[in-house]
Image (tube, rainbow, N blue to C red; front, top):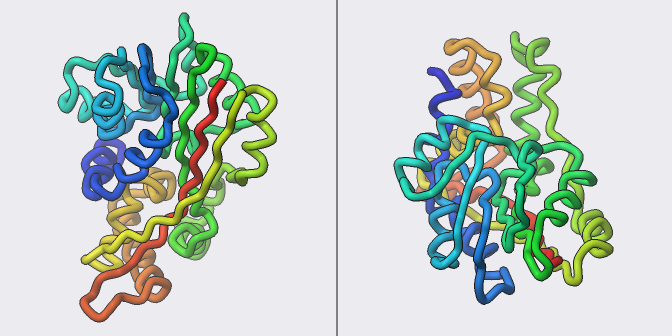
Length: 257
């Protein structure tokens, strides 16, 4: 399987669950009206769709670094301008009222530079709204690394390392001097996955497993996933009906310039 062209399909398998944090973040934005907004790391367009529903009068643009994701987003929302671009390459010619980034900035390094630059592209009173997974300490992620280190692919996957995540204190100290208000909170969602360990694997195929699978052949991918599923089955015991509860912590930031 060519994983580079399957991310969008895999990601949307659990779209309802993935969109719940989008709605929670949107509901926390303290703006009654938005004229211009950008969705950074829009994925398959589910976050952009929710953003438009929340602020229907806004002129919304969106960007993502995956052409596969953008193909899906453009079919979903043909009236929106989608651009193939990473967050680090976004340099707008005019300031905007809202910068929205749901589950995307964790892929981008150097937040000490990135976040202040994003804030600088806001109008006075504008909002930076960000949600990032805060789950690198969870068994699901720890097991990705363990399987990578203990298979025939170990040398090829040795450089797959997650960008370290910063905590709420770090972001508060970074953004307070730049903003008139900063709201930071952490929520753990518990996703009930009826397919058990197989569903946990399917969930992360569209996100966290991508860097591990990309360097592997199709046969190696299947071997890696089988080992990973076996490990997940032990780490996440199923309930009596086979359902697995997947805890998923997420960090939210709403900063007003």
